Length: 433
Image (cartoon, rainbow, N blue to C red; front, side, top):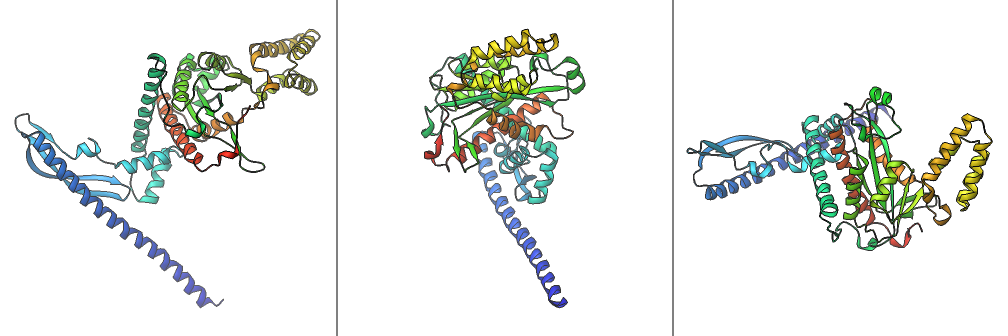
């Protein structure tokens, strides 16, 4: 290709780029004009309504107003009312967007959605790049916190309705009709994040030592997921069906109550066939006994193998796991006790610790009765919900700020899973027995 042709093609590309930018700017200008026209009409109607409701208020002209929208910064004029007797000023437009009428609802929703995945500062820069709006990171943070608090208040309302008021008639409107009454699987786990202040001891687990807490300032995010089974998307890929998630930094008892209330509001009933899978820690056993007492307990096979590997050679671990999976629980315990009795003191203490761990979870070792043995679902939820947003390099959180963002992220994940469910083919559904 000749140089002249290459130059012409480069000029065409530059012209196309300019055309795209100019067209976008023109479209945004028309968009802003239309929004201004409609907002002024709304302000006029609101002013007329308030003057009928409050005749003592008199019109005192108009003042300028600035609103940040998805179309950019909008400047227009709104009415101002004044009551000479009360000496108070009223702006009717504040009833439309609130007293802090600076950001439209649509732009707030977009900012919150992006901020559930990206840090607040990157969210601010991305919105400025894509929409040309200057929305500061603290304003985005404030919107996320306000939304998270509203979601948490609603969950507390459901908790009070179900647990305190004893209202067992609470029926879910969020559960798909096709899945109502189907067997469910409940899993729970936790992960630690860095926090800015020292947290209370009751927000920790027995796994965290005092020196670790003082140096690292850790808090445990407890995570729960309820799902209806899995579907086979391809030969090597499976997908969790209609999961409901919840995460919070809280005591085990408080987390369990809110998590149970959310499960109930998404269709769970104690009469359903339920499988509760966990790593067998003390807190999760208490959670299961308090809120899912009728569930079939299953100890995660990965944590079982890890506890055995820390104390025994691989060939013995394989023998013990095989016995447990075939239902020969007594033989497995007898083998462990024989090894402990014939081992040196250090090894004996480790093996006795494994025996105590298995005794505490004896009712969850019935692997021969269920095909569900691994905690891959909850591990993936912990990764997607917590680690990808809260455990990036240099991040630290306040407990309140983390809980509010966790509430927003949980709501987004629930909504996304319900939307995806509508595109699935139910004949592909497989539920663990």
